[in-house]
Image (spheres, rainbow, N blue to C red):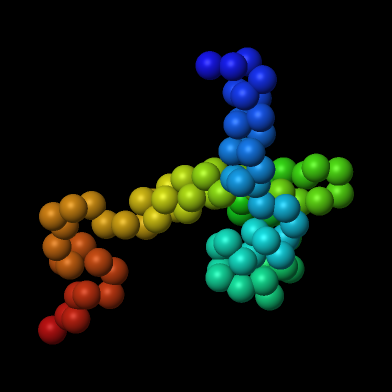
Length: 93
């Protein structure tokens, strides 16, 4: 493998994984660019995995996908659990 090729491939990989700006991050998470202020709010309050390059808020697609999966696993009921343990299912007599 040519030594000049590896860093270039890595930089293209990183560039493809990088989201630049709150609009791009909002489009990736919400499917629309209108959530710019929501992204800033989440970045400040919920440990959304973002970083700044100068004044620009950035995130990596791969890191956001892992973070979202982690958030989902925190609220997903364990496999094989029944509805009997859910809050509000007891109707009383």
